[in-house]
Length: 262
Image (tube, rainbow, N blue to C red; front, side):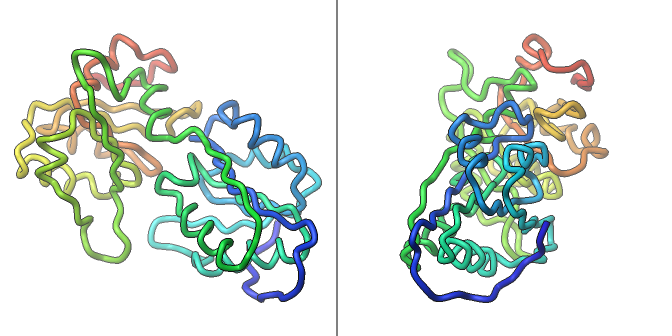
């Protein structure tokens, strides 16, 4: 595997192309067929921390470049990742930018696509199974359900920089049935207090899911009133689901038996 290299390169792009591939939520079986096909023909794979390394087995011929980020630690800045993609494609290579989940759901795939457009690099978006839907599903929680939830919002739980996430909490608390927070486990106290202050009932069911879709998946359920105590041992990566659909978890939980029920 390679580290980062931000050195630019000029020249033609005889056959160079970048595939922005969503690798899915963790379970390697959820990679799409198109994503697998792109990996099989790649010359270079630029991959993230949250992508399952088993997916790299589909690209034994490729040079691997690790650009993984972790919370508050970005050894390869986004601008540098953009430059790597441009440089490799300009050298005529087939590049797969392998991202966790879906490239366009809090994956910064739009920013990378903009950089490729600006550089004149051909590219293709290969959607992935987003963790916002798949992780609740693996916990037996449908994000919508007739008679319970007819609306769902995917919400970032993490803001760039030290400031708290700036959201329309009233609209989220009072106008959306199911809320799915990604990258929010460290902000759980702020999320809970913001929703309650904005009018969401303290009795609203909540689930926090760690390592979703993987063998180590852990599900903790409770309500806005007690989830902070119940989920105090949950570690990132984790997803937070707020809404009445969480009440279906004990009935529909099919993936494992490690749940801590409310």
